[in-house]
Length: 294
Image (cartoon, rainbow, N blue to C red):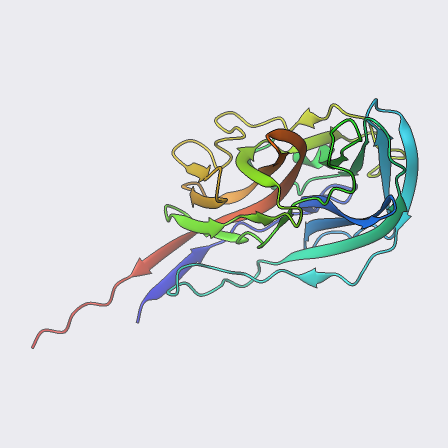
């Protein structure tokens, strides 16, 4: 029988400002009549502080003025499954990511330039290794509702990712993952590896209102970047047309990475959304049994 040795790097929670966030995303659905259902998904380490209840977010005009602020009560949180693509790997204990879902319905009267929806929250889990000083920086997630100047995109629906990424990756193993999304409007989708957006700690973990765009990229540690989020010697790529992603990490630890999907209609870019997600890279050494001599 193969013996699996797993070396885990556990999350710590030393910051007084809820150092637990490992990712998130936002998307929306048109309900007709200028009504939209807005959904936020926030990911945190299970041993971290509680999710916001309620969650507060801001809708801005395209020019960056605050259109309105909203709050959403927390839906029951759930735990994401630990999934491997290697049948020989047994999921390790002590790894747990929890997901909170917040759903709101809001009125956004049609305008020429549209809106953007934003949520900001401090702070990142303090043991994230690929960004500088994560305990004093937080998550920014945002998406755009296009305006009427883009002919034919009224009542747009945001693209939605089909699957959740694997939480745990094996060092020096290549993982293949379907990171594709679905757009019920039939828009053309283009995928890319991108850089998560962040926000500095500013007197507390929440923002009232959120800051207006443009948003700040995370400050990468030396040797890391948006296209090399797992560090030197690793690789990550995604097929721009299909969303098929390949990851080969080689450093043990906890890292954040982001995937962007752009929506095009008749060749015109109408929206972009990002999913930021935290990954644990572990050592998966497999010891082969010795053959018995006959």
